[in-house]
Amino acid sequence: MLETFNFRVILEYLPLYGTCLLATLWLSAAGLAGSLAVGCAACAMRISRFRALHWPAAVYIESIRSTPLLAQLYFLYFGLPSLGVPVSETTVGILALTLNSGAYMAEIIRGGIQSVAPGQIEAAVSSGLSYLQRMRSIVLPQAVGITLPPMLGQAIVLVKDSALLSLISLMELTRAGQILTSERFMPAEGFLTSAAMYLSIYYVLKALTVWSRKRLIHLHTG
Amino acid sequence: MWGIYLEQLLQSLPFFLKGLWMTVAVSGLSLLLGTAVGFLWGIVRASRRRILKALIGAWVDVIRGTPFLVQIFILFFILPEFGVHLEAFPAAVIALSNLAACFICEIVSSGIESVPHGQREAAVSSGLNGYQQLRHVILPQALRVILPPLVGQYVLLIKDSSVVSAIGVMDVTRAGWLTVQRIPQGILVFGLVGLLYFAICYPLIQISGALEKRLGRSSRR
Image (tube, rainbow over the protein chains, first blue to last red):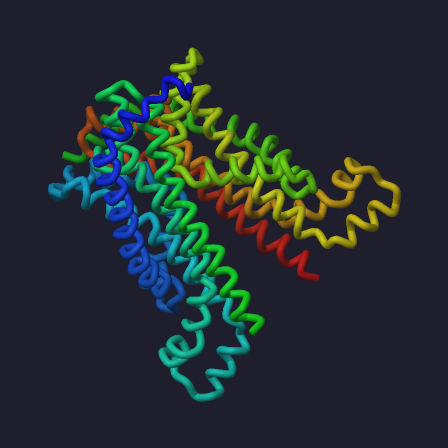
């Protein structure tokens, strides 16, 4: 295999891969930022005591978690134009990633908030702190440390999920592999290069996850 | 206007159900294979065989670090260069089984490691051999930790199976993609697709949650 593996073609297409790597990073970062915002909002609504807030959030989270991202992507990609909403592929892509990851983020944040010991909240209540004060100075500072590792895990998922955007012909790493396949009939070179680039992003994020876990253990023991 | 489209969509319902059957077939087969292989790898990973452990660990990292879509494309487009021609269905099953095995391997090995060390020592001093230790002492206790995330993982894998539509497997997602070319109502068509996935995945998510509550409580005694 290696004797026929054409490194020169990869070198020739390296600028394309560079652009596409940046696009993958950018799309995932946009999705991550969006999903953090959506996740916070959805989580706040879900743990709220008001039914009018609780139910929409619960329906959103459960329906996202029970359906595949690809179906959600196509739902928006084919659905928005049929409603007469003109959107670009990039917008649809980021929107799909945001809405999908947002549901998982909401659950991660909820897990973090619920992991704060009930005694802490009781202590805060008896110290006379209001709901907002309790959240701000007791619950959230502890929840952030706990949620960091699973959030980084979600970031890894986001980077991999962004590969699906190639199916609505957005330019990103997987699309670069498809281009090399269709222009030069070299799927091995094309997709293995994409895979190598995804893998390098993965190893960086994985190292960050390990670091954040260690830091968490220090926080709890030190 | 929606009425006409809704009627057309209902007429193509058998087509969607056929797709649903394909989704169930691909993911069911892959989950079976993936669970078997995943348990095997997980047991090896929790053992003391250094080289095998490292090999499996590296492979799991490669699979977890790359998108499933890219894995499928590699399997489907590169194997023919070596003279191995796979149809879309077997290619999908192989790729999804491998993905399943890699995730299940991690769940199984951390489940085995959660069993207190004294249990194994007791099993050894009772004169049980390696297989008996695993079968009668370690696995029954590990299963408690393994089961809830395993069912959760099944849901993720069933959802991942939608990606095999990209190489032309006629699953629900592919059925939707073909139908939307004819009935240009994305909301309706993919609403139906989503509903069919929901019907499979939502009960499984509930089962996973219930298992977690029950097994989690009993092991905390």
